[in-house]
Length: 126
Image 1 (cartoon, one colour):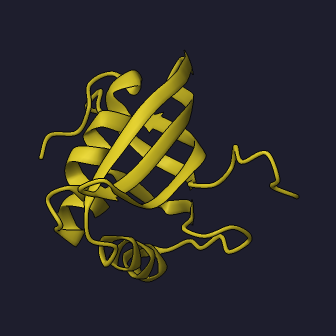
Image 2: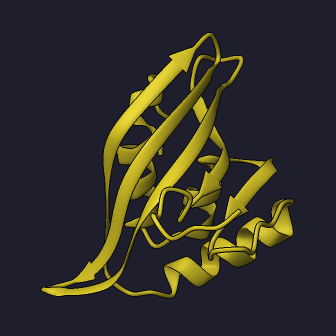
């Protein structure tokens, strides 16, 4: 899987990675020194915790779709807002509104450094 060359393509690339069902492919999208929040109130960091979080999300069988609501970039940093879901046929297994911070790599590609999968939910309390 190729990393996105534009920050605004990160959501589509992430969905495609998840839909491979392969942990290594999904992990490639992330800077594991960052943070992933796979469920509300439970942020984790580091390779091992990222792998655990991604493995858990991949255990939800179905197709992931991510809609980019917005993506703002300044220099080598971007923030995106997404609406995502995992569906199996007509059944919605999970859906949420997320916020992602992306960092441009030295080769011009983008990785996600903060993935708050539920960060834009209306009832989220800090």
